[in-house]
Amino acid sequence: MRVSDAQRYRTFSQDIQQRLVNMTRIQRELATGTSLFAPSESVTRAESALRAEDELALERQFMRNIENGKIVMNAADAKLGSVVDLITQIETLALSANDSHQNEEDRRNTALQIDQKIEELVRLTNARSGDRYLFGGHGTTNAPFTVERNESGRISGASANPDTIAGIIYRRIGANEDVQINVSGAALFQPVGSKNTDQDVFYVVTALRDTIGNNNMPPEGFEETRANEYLRERLAAIRERIAEQQVYLGSVGQRLETSLARLKEHEVLLTDRLEEAQGVDLTELVSRSAVEEGAYEALATLGGRLLQRSLIDYLR
Image (cartoon, rainbow, N blue to C red; front, side):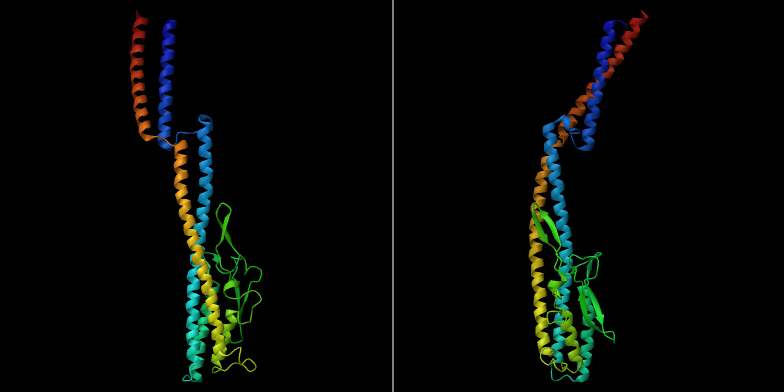
């Protein structure tokens, strides 16, 4: 084979190899949806893509924090709604026991009904969302309230976990923006240092039950502070305190929804920026693919002819 023929075939081989490289690149871009595989291919585009990816990762974490916060807050709000309903039922029973038409047996029966409501109240104050307690402050793995019972097995009170009950749980929902997603058992049911006072819901409901069970007569020496009417007033104040915390949850819920909507809008912009930096133009790629395939086929046909011609020249 002459030198000129060797050069010709070397050039042909390089051309067809380049077409194969081009076709492989196009297929890779089509398969992955990206046109940038290494920063060295375009430093400017790579930097833009990295910034967009970093911002997307951070904002998606904010969105996950918001979704998590919504789950916790919605669960807490639902349980508090049940607590408010339960307290209202206890108030209604206590009011009926204050009626002069009820006799001693009626009041004992009313006290038994209230006793069952107290059992349910304790279950609600120790409610969980998944495996986390809702009202334990920052102590979400241990029950916030420990029940105390008298010799007859009735609930006589409850003690809060003093180390965690007033704790606050925050979630970061934006750059330098944290939001409290819990309402503590201290704010709701038993303020710190208020055990066995008229601020303690467990004290109030058990005292009310016992007074009604004693034919609506408070213990001697407690004629005023354990009277039916006084305890109902205290229970109503606690109910309002809980309702105020529900309002707080509602306002924070609206804030979370607003932040989530804003983050989702920005996510679209960042995704577009990322697509612009490293994405592909499908129409252009399909067109380039057709051109490269056509060129490859033409070169392959030409190569076959050249090989045949060289063989004939050699035989001559």
